[in-house]
Length: 79
Image (cartoon, rainbow, N blue to C red; front, side):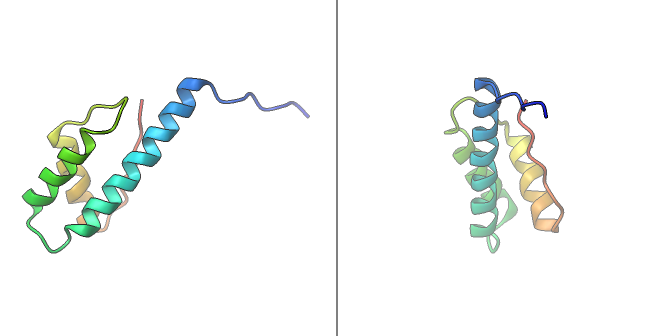
């Protein structure tokens, strides 16, 4: 059997950022479920600004909050 190639440093960093962002999105969306959508978007956007190695605009935060509040799956892909 062929050995699998070990993930590169860039792949590891991308995976770390994806996990961190997923945890933040889940936490903020569930914590603000009873609050106004705009409040949830502001809180999520502010919190995402602290993620090292990634940049998120307010439109991305809005899409995340609205999608998850509808109960739809929100797939996070870091490129």
